[in-house]
Each structure stands twice: as structure tokens, then as C-alpha cells.
Image (tube, rainbow, N blue to C red; front, top):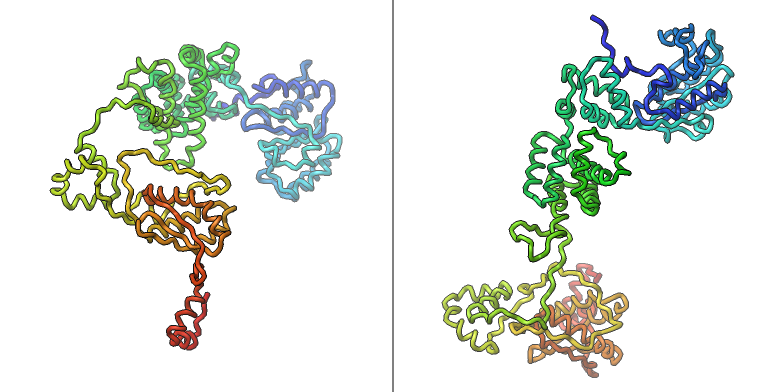
Length: 607
């Protein structure tokens, strides 16, 4: 049985002309050889599988060829070329820097450099994956790399150019290898298939080229894999099945559903894709690429950017004419945002489904007027909904006046939970008094409210913007609502929201906020007016300035429009300031001297 050789090795280029996708670099190297202008050090950098090591070997063989051709290629007939082809040449040395990256390895290489070649003109040292050398090895290699013997040429190859020291880069001629485009890979695979007598569809080879991501070695490896799977008959369906590639047809069907606003069909197609074992991130990146391909298919000048087969190219052109540029721009942006947020999302399927819903609604209302739109088929946007416009007081109301029972029911629903509970305990009483309540709304019984039953939570208050005292509102806009009820509150609730108001003041009012915390508002007999006693007229003036804001805040929090504030200066024998802990203890100890003895025995102190 003959030994099998993989295609990546069997069809490895042996001349510059057979190198695929690097015409500019190979032409430069051939001209340098023809003009005898060879540098002492080269750096070949680029992605994997694009021909760096292959070009280094061809270059080493060509400069040692005893009878080069007129176009600068090796003759493959002289002793030097035969020795290289049979892998017995002593003029070409390859070193893997990934496993030989120490200083001792570089010193051993430097000792070999001194020996001149036996056959040919140059000794070529190819160091692969040179970025794996340690810093000490790089430093030991610097002097030899800068001034090697006239017969020594170094070719460094790497996939990570940024990891190489700048002092090494400055001593080399740098050649950047590009990724091989899809068309060149397909052409090369077709030649290989003809030589191997394998039937291959162009669309199938195109999928293999795209899967290779610009690397010829990867493309040939995938080609061998598919050949083993199909037994020499490569078809489009067999390739997508073997490589687990999502079929173009899914994306075309999804786009048709997007254009027709069929959200349900989009979700079903996505569910079918997941059941076939495809990853959600792979799906969303493929959908982004599909929209990109549709965009470049709209214009003949950008059609060359579409890297697909001929039959699929026609399908792209047909569907691209149905999509507007605005739709494609927004769809690409939504898919790209979904791709960025995919790894951070805990519910990845929901994230993709929301993206599909958004894309399906991009054309929802653009071409249909409000009068022609079918309410059963229309879908409201999921995100960025415009807030509903509030009906102004000037708009006429067409609704009929509600009945007494409806009015009372709506009033009960608007009450806090405590008030509803009080009425729920007496259902018979409610039903008997519905008509009387509706007849005399002004004589409603005002429910007794507690701070805990208000709409605003006591434990966690919302944080509105600080109240600015530079432009106080002189007038409080009354709430125009016929069903409004002024709640009854007690002094405890008043003091609580008084303290809460001090936390809402801006930094400029920090001094007044500190004074207000030491004040104690007193509720008067009318249960709506409260009095604040201050030390002097200056504080009284500041409090009167803040009075409109205080009243407006308390009216909103306590749900009472009749709240008023009065400020007066304390009398001579009246102490308006708050006592400290020490002062309170001294006053209490005067009435009960035993407290002083208790403090001394236990050694108590005031913090």
C-alpha cells in the first residue's frame, strides 16, 4: 500500500510561480535574486497557512541554484536543487524557535554560522515562530543578526510580529504576507481536484474557502476531510453537513420573513436552526454577514466584494433589490449589537429572539398608512416606543358621564390599601351607601391615613433632583381633579416629611437644611396649618423664602392641598432650639440626681 500524503504537503509550492495569493512578495524576491541584491536578514510575518515557510524554502533553494532559469526560478536539476528536494541539503537549516528558545540554542546556531557552505553560495537559516525566543536569546542573537558572515542569510518567520523586539525588526527586511482571498483558494482547489480526479461543485469549494479564513493549508486540510466524507464527490449539501455550516437558504428565508414582518416565522426558523445543533453566536454572526452581502449586492461597483458562488450570487442580487439601504443599515447595527452582548447575556436565546423581533419590525410602518394598516397583523415596536401623549385639558371629551356606581368604584380603586381594606370589611354598608355617596361628593368622609399607607414608601424614598432655592416658585399650581380628596395627616407624618425635605435641598442650602433638622413643626388645631418657631429674624426670613417649596412638597407627599406653613420668632422665655444629648441629661439629672450616681458607677460617657 502506497503511503498517503496529505494535499497540504503533496501540493506544496516548489517555485515562486506556484505560490498562491502572494504575487507582490514573490515578484520582489525574484527581482532581488536576479539583481544579486540580497539582504542578510528577512522577516516573513502574516497569518497561519499563507506561505511564509514555503516562500522561505523556495528562496533558499533558488539562491543556491547553480543554473537558475531566465525568469529567476530554480532549475530543480542541479545538485543543490536535487539535494534540497530530497531533504539532504546542508545549506538550509530550519530551527523551530518554539522548542529551541533558550540562549544555549542560539549560541549553538551562532557556532554553525561560521562554517561556510560546501555546495552553493549561501547557508540559509530559517527560524520559524521566532517570536517564541526568550528575551535573553534575542539579545544573544542581535550581534550575529546585524553582521553575519557573507555566506549566511537569516529568514525569520512569525505569526505575531508585535512580540518581536524592535531591535530585531530594525535589522531585517520585513515582508507582510496577506490572507489569501476566496477566489484564489477556489481556483487552487479546482486544480487539485482535477489532478486527483475528484468531482467538486464550485459552491462547495467556495464554502471550503470561506471556512479556511484565508489560509491555504487549512483549505487543503478541509478539502481532504470532505473528500473522505463524500468518497470523491464533493457537493454543496455534503460540505455544509460535514463542516456544520449553516445553509444560505436559512438566511434568505429569514430575510423574506423580515421584509414581510412575519415575526412568528422568524422565531420558528431560529428554533429549527437551534435544533440542528448550531450555536446562537455563530447564527447571529452569519446573519450579520448576510446583511452585509446584501448591501454590497445592491450596487454593481461593490458586487466584487461578494465572495460567493455564481448561483448564490444571483440569489443575493435578487433579494438585495427588495431591501432598502435603511433596512440593511439598521439590521446590521442590531445584529452587531447582539453579537457584542452575546457573551454577557445570561439568556442568550432571548437576546437573539429580541433582535429578530426588532429586525422584523424595521419595515413595519414605513410603507403603510395608519388608515390602511391591519390591526391584526401590525406589531408595535419592541424598543424605543414613543411615550403616549397626554390629553390636554383643551381637548373635548366625548365619553359619557359615568354612573354613580362606576364613579364610586373608580374612587375606591384609587385609594391606598388601608382605605380599601376599611371598605372591604363592610360590603353591605358600601352597597347601601353607593347612591348617597354619588349624590353628595362634597360630604365624603375623609379617610384617616397613616404614613405607611401612602403611595410613597417610607423605607426607600425616590431620589429626585435637588430643590434649587435660587428661583423659588411663588405659586403652587392647584391640581385640577374633581375626584381629589384631601387626606388627614398627623404631626408624626408632618415631621417625617419635614425631615425628608431637608435631604432634597441643594448644596447651597446646606446651612438652612441643618437648621431645619433641629426644628420641630407643630400642627395647629385646624389640622392643615403647622407652625415653625425659629431663633431670630434672619432664620425667619430664610424660612419664609423656602416656605413655597416646603408647602408644595408637603402637599404632594401628604396628599392635602390645604397645608400651610407659618413661621414666627420665639419669645423671650421660649426656647426654640433643640437640646443636645448632654443638655437633656443635665436637665434630667436635676430632677433625678440618681442618674449622676449611675453614670459615675458605670463610667458612662456621651458620644
